[in-house]
Image (cartoon, rainbow, N blue to C red; front, side, top):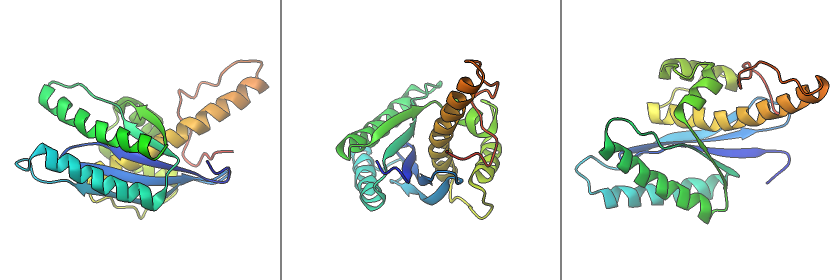
Length: 194
């Protein structure tokens, strides 16, 4: 990995649409969204094998173009619909396979952790997460094409904020004789990696 820059690929996996985002972190600077989009993989009547193959092809292009160091992916969520959970698991399998192929570090992040780290509340709405994502990035011009794209940016940013939080906790622990600050794992908007 490059010392001067850390590049994270955030993925919100799905079998109809998958959001992706490339976010860079530089020392002493706000994270920067490099690019993001939503991969439309087909309609619900398109065979699942075709949609998964399309995800593989499209994701390969994204990874080859941007060469991320880290893959941050939303971890499996088990709701009431077992069929949906199975399908998302299939998409996650393709994404994780690609990360291994390109020798990327992988971090699987639960949805509530993304919400808590970005917006300060594990039950935050998608709109609240989006607005706080803009603040953390220090921008107002980002208009995602879909919730999947917006979620992917938040997932990538969440990974970077977890690094900044760990560094801040480590620095504060050494300054406070081992006592940890009460930040709840969330840094205020505008925090940077040191």
